[in-house]
Length: 284
Image (cartoon, rainbow, N blue to C red; front, top):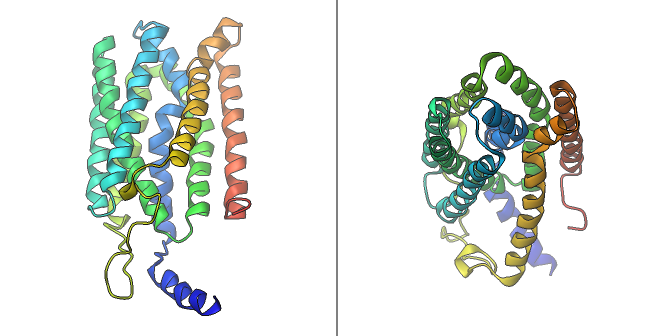
């Protein structure tokens, strides 16, 4: 038993990829881009309703189309990202985010807004798949996931408060340009993301797929876990999207609503920081 561990451990260490601070900074930025529109959806909802005249039902369709597209794209890209040039996939994803964002800034109807958010969803899904695959090969995945989540959550409060100001003072295009700017910065820094992370065996051949990997299909346990996560996110998303409208309905001013949303994001960020400090899943 001891000899087996001693021969495997050096190999695992050799195949781990250690990232510098600049790579982690880009990965955090990618998570901010991926979750940016989700975090500001309460403010986004108010803008779509007040500035474009969309109904709450139409807004629900818009965001559902974006999220479903993002999830489907992320799943598809995850299946091909390891043997592919992930840097190129990331770059095309960021281009899609900007194309959809600029289209959204010019959109004035329900159909055009929905189409533009679907394009954004394609880009976000590709960005997330590359980001998660890159972190998975870093040798410190648990801490890495917590770090990027904390970065996105702590970016949320100033983004929510700033988005409220941008919408009231300058309208929808100014609100959307913050996402275009972030995507442009990430595109310029995308060369820091490794193209691939091969994990060879002693013979120089790739490791065989492990039970439970995508090459073996998705088992019942994985399916049930995905279903539970999906239901939790569904309930959260329904409440989160309409928070701004709920606040307005009970007489809260925009500043108070923004502070409440910011407090929720900060609380989540603190939880992610704790997870990053622990560096591993409890009981694992």
